Length: 277
Image (cartoon, rainbow, N blue to C red):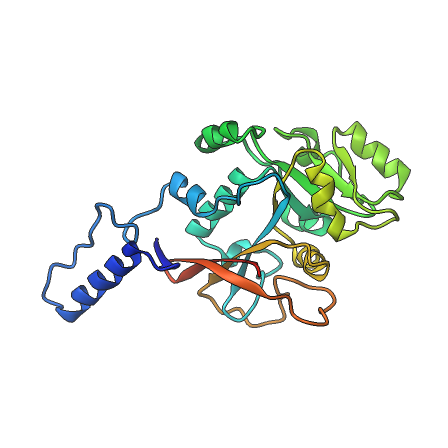
């Protein structure tokens, strides 16, 4: 793993070594290991530092998505085929840092979402931050058309949240609560108002928020200008076809401008971070 942006002394050192090795092909090609972040796997502590939430008690909503070079957010309906080992480590790191992971009901149904696990590697980080053993999964759903017998609802480390509107079907709300889910209201009517999701969770002390999509949910957050940060993995793959982009739904009248804050690279994958300008 190497950091491409922002440029640091390590970045310059990596560039110098790369130039030296390519300038003379007769030199020893064994990569440097000691203190060389470009030639080794980053530790979870290093990844946690690189992806730390900004300090403060205000809700911060970040998204984590992956896209191919030609803009596909999935292949055959799933994101895993366009991902990679390091992308999954970052996926786990972002979960390990979050108070709650926000996901759409359709993604829960398609990808078979399970509860977030308690991970020993993040136990100290979470304890120091006053967090629960594992992040809560917060499912955004208007109709609550979900299978409440799934482990996501029956056996989570931290109770699963259901984010819905005030007029959600009463029988489905009751079924969710019987299964052990906690219902959170983020809308006056039958649907969820995206701009109210983060504040509603923050009222429960959940301020470090992560959404993993899907594209429809992310599009709703983008349209409501409720997204603070995008962590986008650019996969060195081409998929063609008609796969959805990372954000769907209605287009904004004017594009919402974000600022690049970080780029990491490994094996052709780019791990980028953008924040609202």
